[in-house]
Length: 456
Image (cartoon, rainbow, N blue to C red; front, top):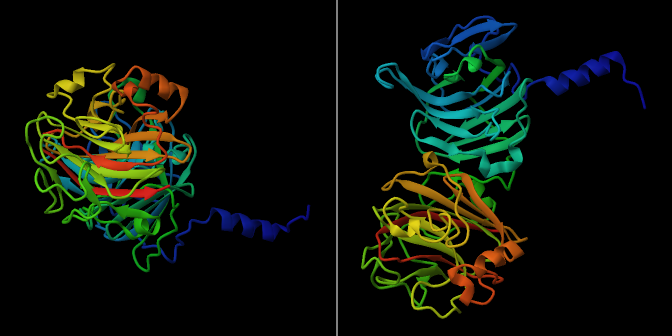
């Protein structure tokens, strides 16, 4: 092996560790490495100090979430830093374009805004995007499972955050983690969080931030991995990145293009509306096919990634079906694999079936969804469903970005479940090579929007 000279080795090492935003490019004054000038503490009572060129936050028992925030506000920027958290019992984050409500949190003060999550727990959601004090999780890292191991506990990790226009993207140690297109907060402060703790063993834990660099001009986005899912809150629109990666809108916000009745050659003349950005199932008799009937896509799909937003009214029942062939003989709704859309608390169907396999986000009558209540948005609010069918027939259901079930279509386990379900009367149920996508009319008022699909 050819030996390096000492000077060459030093240059090579410097090139490796130098942050990608250089000192010349960065905006001076974010952190001088010695003092907390330009920063202020908000909300809780956790402690912040400067030690050996790093900002060090320390947890305090029974304190609320505490933030060290910039006195200056920032709009578009690229922010990079190195961060370390010493214990998996801790939690932290970096606020972006955030704000403060002095009257919030019962007068203790409330910081709110999008946060780069630092989560060393077993779920490994570091790099995900959380809306602190407002909307909860925007991008759980279940949406990008390949990035879950990017963050390491007890050592410094290099993080990158891009906030350009309506888009926020995150990286950890060079690995792209999350991509959110949002329509709120065009500017605000940057903040470093020390999370609240309530157990003695969580107190006194430290989180470190150093080598903070921010660029606010001549911003050039870093290439982001093609297959990482984008959470897009711009209604019925695709981002440039989504369009480039093959996503297509299945509803344009104002026409029925691409859809027809399951038992018709055209779109139903009654029972549905498709105006003002919403595909709307009108209430009828509360039974399958009691209104305008189910609608299906004109196109057929085999391997695909489907995302959709839905809103339920009290007691409502609907569903999103896939691999719908329209060849089965049935008196009710068309037959297919179904992502259940249901008010679990008020609709009786939630208590039928086996082990909750007819509840929200379940594979209807086959596999129950494993979901936590905190990730289910209330009736009258919008939820986001996602169905991924890989070319190898592995299928995943998500609800609001959290994986709630997975299975292998056509496997022995799948066939065994079909054999004890309502679907046993149909030969090779759910195993078609391709099929339509379907929105169900179950006679209840339900709303859909931002329906998009990518062929895999």
